[in-house]
Length: 367
Ligand SMILES: [Zn+2]
Ligand SMILES: [Zn+2]
Image (cartoon, rainbow, N blue to C red; front, side, top):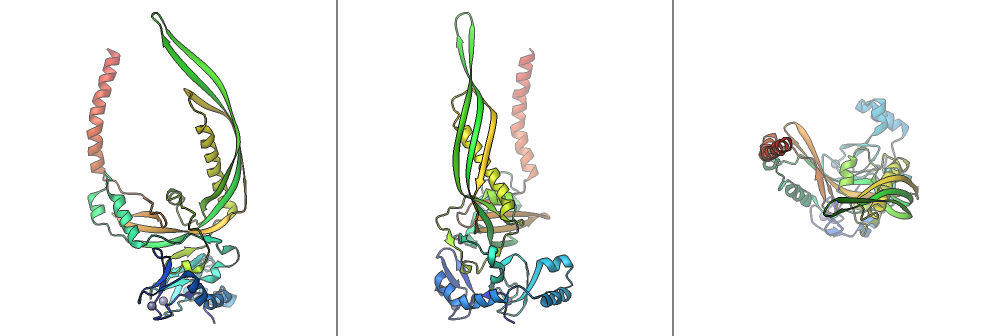
């Protein structure tokens, strides 16, 4: 039976090809030969078509796999086993896996059958930065972090580093806002005999439309939403039409949170932006409170795209730390451990003089 997965091997030496961000070409790990994306598409079109046609395992195959691996019903539902086209070893994937790497021979594999119909992205931002850049970004991230335990940075062993194409929905929308604010302007004057304070009261009305284009929301339940939101923005200049030739060498999962579900998060973000934009236009007052808020958002069908993310994980004193880096811009986010001793020393150093001032002020107040 034809394999449902494809690997991309160098035509001159059969070494594994992977997409190389710096050049935008596919490069051979062995002989360093380089190929254009379009060339690779053409060379592997037949292989990919065959893999796509082979599709997902038949009912009998699925039953056989379930029994062979001792999977539960739930696992059998989610998991897929494929034979690696390079070494024949078995690759265990999930139903959402679109690209992976064989753990035995290290060859990048793509699962074209996972990218059929609605699961086929419209667009992709290819990787620009490589693994080395991700490691360097993490080093830079540690710098100047006051409470980072010294041993954490010094022993910095990255347990895992992986380039992942994360599925995103990009929403276009039109928002309408109708807001009323109550504001005051306070004027103070001092004459020889009295203090005069005049407060003017205003009702402020704001109405208008705002258009939004390609608001991104990550569509994978596996990715922490806060990390994904925090590594934005992506720039859309090198948003390309999707091709599987950008995938070799990276992991990729198709979406498991659909457009409808993600649309709520996009609407929330758009509403918040409308609120912020309107509020920003109310300037020059002593106080502003919002009295009315009416925001409606209408959404167009979303664009489905893959965005590049480097995931780095480290373990320290039994705890896992996950970092995410934007594979296009290099923006990195993540949590760091805090050296409690350093923290309290600092706190004591700052807190003592503050407390002294505070008690002085309090005493002054009482006396
Ligand atoms: Zn080669
Ligand atoms: Zn293999």
